[in-house]
Length: 628
Image (cartoon, rainbow, N blue to C red; front, side, top):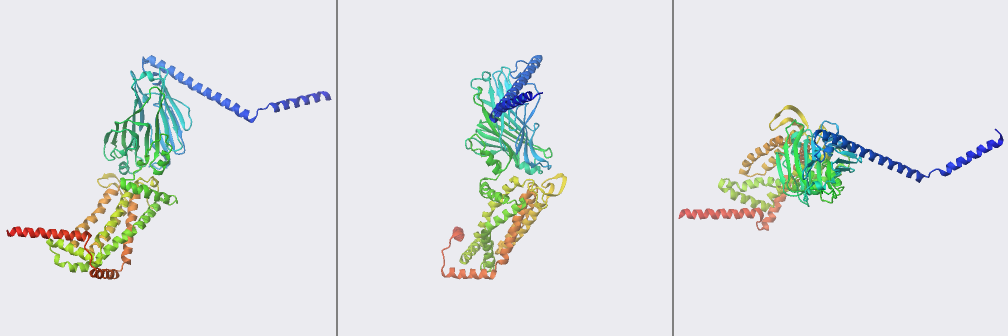
């Protein structure tokens, strides 16, 4: 090969390389080409789906023809193979089945079940069914009988389509949000001629066999029910938790929910559920693994033309007040859903306390990362600090009456006959007024504390933050902590003994002894004798509490135990720091001051004095009549 030949080949190579480099596609052209290929692939997938649907339709037609069942409108969708489509995010995993086209399983992530396994299964295809029913002129359409074809499948979306023999279809379109809210719609396409001209509503049957999710059947069952909210700003209510109940609701509803102690599934309709919804709850036996059987019959708006779709949302998740508030903001219906009512914070007064005080304090303390048992202790200390001025005022009032007791005994000893009790009370009230002592001041502050105690009775058992949390010997603050268990159910006790319940009841006995002794020290005359009967009643109450609270959550019993412990500690401290001699000297000084500057009798003393005068007047009139 000569020099000229080599030179020629080199020049040709340079030209080819330069031409290839010059004609290579840009980055934008490459991306456009990729999009084109993706579009071709998507078209191919849609083509394959349509071919599969057509093939399924041909097979169904052939099978229906072989059976002589070609008259059914959806005979092409009456046969098929069930397929599960999973929608999932970091919070939930939901399964939609092609048989029926509705939700068949719901799993809430991030929680352990009662057996300690990861994640909580709220229901599966054996527990819950949702069925959409349309009444046609000739045929009734029941989605539970149909096989749907899935398309548009991602982790958050799926479209379920059931084909009709006339070329129409029913379409269920699902979209899972980032948290616990599932959006879905129901639409009928090409079926308008099959319904009466005035047909504008469809029926929905939604049933659930509510699983037992917690260790304590009886306690969880108390908080399990069907909840519902009346539309257009109406109230939220629920069926009885303790008895079988069937109820027809006369007003339209925004939503209906199946709620157990810590988890709920709520179905929301954009166009409301019509009046006359029927809700039913039937209790299951202990040991069955279930709590109640829920059944609902609902109606909502339906457009036969398919122009307007029927839209729904479903909340699937924990009964966490703050979480539900956040998820509710994701609703696209523009309604004041008030789903937070699924968290049971008590009756209106106690709900106000829990809503605007306890929740904020609990969230603040929990944000510091303290164990939940420590959070309960800190809440107790905070409440004791807030109520300490009232407790001190109550104690000092009792202490004043205690140091005055010898003087009262001496001043009222002539009124020991039963018929003289009114005069005795009047004399005592007069002395109290002279010494500047108000007996009622010892009662009212304690009554003010009662709403807080009762508010915590509602808050603690419904705080999902306590679920599965251990503290000291307690394995789960949301359920009972047994020290002894047996298989036989004993009336009033159950099948276990709860340690925190025993501690609560024992501390209640000791605290009752302290308070009764304090009150006995200030009683005068026959009041001390009457106090003995009340003393036995006070000692009987902790025994009654044991039968009531043995099934309750260890978190609630633990709170009451430490609350009583700190109450006893405060009372002991006040007793040790109160100097009776100094207190009596202060009262004597006040007595001299009031004696020199007498004040008009008022309040309870004035009412007793008026009652005494009326009694004396009646006695005088009787004596005059007897003389006649």
